[in-house]
Length: 528
Image 1: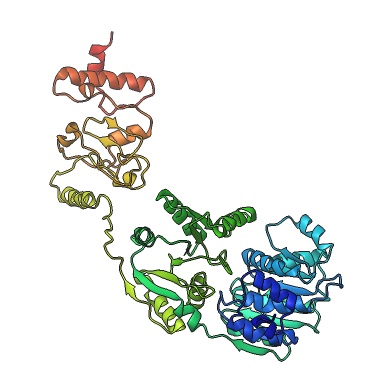
Image 2: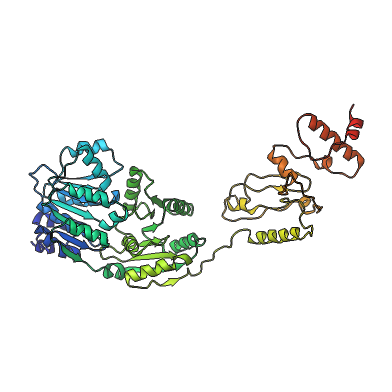
C-alpha cells in the first residue's frame, strides 16, 4: 500500500517505518526536497526550524547508502552537541530498516571510546566541527570517500565562528559528492559558501510566515530590568505553561534566573555551555520526558532543540536580531501545533524590537502585565531621609553629629545577608548576624534604640588625621578594641574624668588605645 512518502520516491521499508512512528504526511520542505535529493542533486534549502528539515535530508541519504560498503559514506555537520544527538536519534529510528549504521561525534564525550567505535566505520557520522577536526588530526576518521555532505543549521555555524573549520572539512572530502545545505536564514557568507562548494545547486525557499506567524501567538511585554523577573513570575503563574523554554543572553543570567525560579517553587533547570556534557544530556532527558517544566537556556545551548509539547517560549532577554528571534520562537508551534512566544522589552530594547518586527514583517502587540504590582525598592523613604540629614549636616544645623552613627545601612538588608550595626553616642555597638527579614521576601527596618535616638548633637571639629569624619567607635571596632561601658566613658563629675585618665594611662602602658585624654596629675593621684 502506497502513501504520500512512497509517491515522493521513498523506499517502502522507510515509509513503513515512518508510518509506525505516526508520520504519514510529508511537510512542505520534505515534498520539495526529497525527490531532487534522491536524484543526487545538490541543494541549498532555507526553511524555519520545526518544518521537518531533518527527515528531508536523512530519508534520501538512508535510501542511497550502500550497506555492503564498510566506510563512511555520509557526513552531517551540526553546530551544537544537542542537535547532533537529536539528528542521530532520528536517524537510528530508520537506519535499522535499511541496514545502515550511524555514530554521533561531539565534544564532551570520551575521545578514546569514540575512537574505538569509529574502528567499525559507521556509514553515517553526525558531528560537530570541533570534534570532527580532532578525529581527523588523530586519523580516526576518514572522510575521503563520503558521497553525501550535509551542513545543517549553517547560519548558526557562521555565527559561532565555525566557518573556517567547515571549509577545512569540506576540502578534505571528494569533489564527486552530493552537498546539501539547510538553514533557517541565509546570510550572504553562507550563500557564498554553498555556491563555492556545490555543483549547480537547486535553491529551495519555504516561506517562513506560515510557520513563524500563523502557528505562534506573539506579543511583547514592556518592562524594566528591575521589574522583569517579577513580570515573568506573574506570567508563569497566570499561563501555567505545559512546557516552557526561557532564553537568556548569558550563562550567568540563565543561572541566576534558574535559581530564582526554583526558589519560587517551579520545576526548572538550566542549559548552557558551562555544564558538563553529562549534565546537559541529563537536563535534556528530563525535559523531553516532561519531568522538567521550565528550561532556562542560552541561544547556543538550545540551538536545534526539538522537544514535543513546548507550549511557551519566553525571551527574557530580547534577541539581537530577527534571525535569532525566529530560531528562539521556533521551539514552539512545531509540527502544526500552536504556541505562545513572549518577549520582554525594556526602554533600551526598542530599536531591537523594531528590527525584529521588520525582519518578520509583523508588529508585536506591546503591553504591560495587567494587574502586576511591583514593590518599590526597599528603604526608599529611608534613603531620602538620609539625604535630608546630609543636607542638614552640611548646612551646620547639627542634625547629625557623629558621621555614620545612628544610621541603618539599608544596603545590608537589600543583600539579605548581614545586618548593619547600630551605634549610639556611647560608642557601644549592637550587632546582629542577619537582617530582620530572615529571607522572608520582605524587608523591615530595625527599631532604633532609645539611647541612639536621644544622642546629643555636639559639633565635632575636623581632625587632619581623620578627614573623612569616621567615628571613634568605628575606628575602635575596626582595630578589634572592645567598646567601653557608658558609665566609665562619659560623665560630668571630676571623679569620672579622673577615671578616664586612669584607664587611658593603663591602656597606654599595655599597648592599647582609648578615646579619652590622659592626665598625668589625675593618674598620679589614683595610682597606689
